[in-house]
Each structure stands twice: as structure tokens, then as C-alpha cells.
Length: 211
Image 1 (cartoon, rainbow, N blue to C red):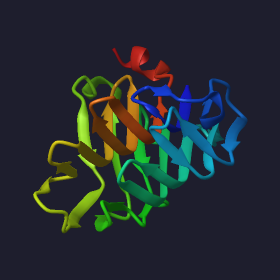
Image 2: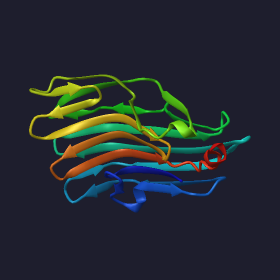
Image 3: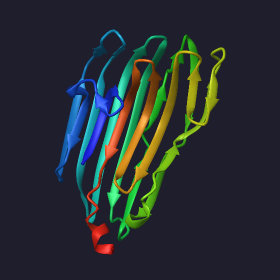
């Protein structure tokens, strides 16, 4: 299975028009909404998600991407957020490969009028034998974050705004059961708002054969 969600609470899209899900090979699905708002909490311009599944020779390939334009949540604004995730099974026999990027973008992000500069690595991939994916790998695509907002704290790929929100940028979690790539997670008292949440759950038939 492969899922691309443009915007929602963690694991739960706000609208069916912002999420695409696919469980069949040799096909693709996309969803688009020109503008969106949710209970006075946030507004966006166009939101888009795409997923695809197929074969490249003997390799099973799952892909997902999502895009959010003109996001506003209280004093946070962002012109563009975009993320991509790809999963390849048996590219090397008995192995699964998860890749993020190229194509990840974060543009025009501000908090309270202060620009936030997030520098991203061009791409990241990890390849593991099925039998060695029991633990969850967590990897960020962020090289650095800069922001002049008073009192802000930055640790790795997270940015905390005092008494307001915690932002987590471009984080990949991968295990034997699949991978989740999240471009932006905003922790607020109302819940975690997620932008461009992508998931891939490969069918690891070869894992049983290896045991």
C-alpha cells in the first residue's frame, strides 16, 4: 500500500480531497483541492497528493508525493511545502530500499513575520535486508535551521516556539513494516498538524522465503 496525504492531523487527513491511497500495482491516483480551510485553525491554497505503484523489471516500486501551497496557521505562514517518497522491493535480492528526494521543498516559511531558513540535503536513501529491519530507523533530511524569532530553540530538525508550537521538518521513519516521511509536523495544543505525510508499506513476500 502507498498513501500520500497533503494535510491533516497525524495519520488522519482533514479531507478525502487531500489524500490518495493505492493498493494495486500498475496504477496511479491523485487528489487535488484548490483551496482548503479547517475550523478557523488553518487555511491553504492548492493542496495535491499523488501515489503510484508498479514494476521496474523485477523490482516492485511504490511512490508518493504531496504539495501544500500558501499555508497559514495562526502566525505561521508558508508559501510552499513539497515532499516525495519512493520504496523499491528486491532491487537487490531480499532487500527493501526507501528513498526521499530529490523534489523536497520548503519555501517562504515565516513565524510571526520572522523568516525561517531550512536547508535540506538533496536526498537520502536507506537499504536493508528484510530480516534486519526490526528496529525503526529515524533520519532527517535537514542540514540546518535558522530563525531570528525571540526565544526560539532549535535542535536538529526541530524548532520550538515558546508557549506556542514545536515544528519538526522532513523526517523519515523506516522499519520492516514500511516507512513514513513527513515534511512538516506542527505540535500545537489542538493536536499535531501534519503537512505532506507520505507512507509506503511494501509487500515483503521475499521475507518469508528468507527465513
